Amino acid sequence: MRNLFFVLLTFAMMAGSTFLVGCGGGVDEEQIQQLNDLKAEVDALQSQVNAKA
Image (cartoon, rainbow, N blue to C red; front, side, top):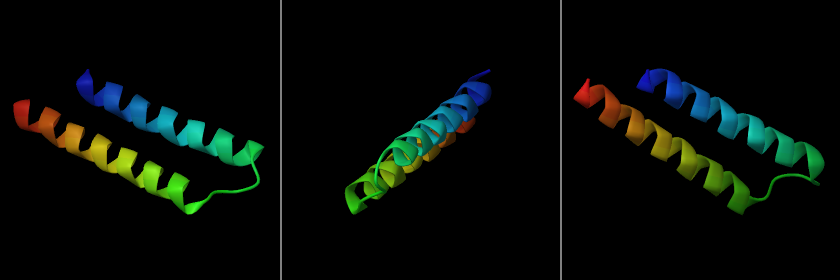
């Protein structure tokens, strides 16, 4: 159940970032760093969930 949540969360983040890029003039370095930080946070949370399972 938690794995499904994190998969959906990751998908939502990626879809949201795609929407923002599509509406703007492009991606700057700060946005790329924010996305990378979010991906790292999701990976860390996923590892915690897997460790507790």
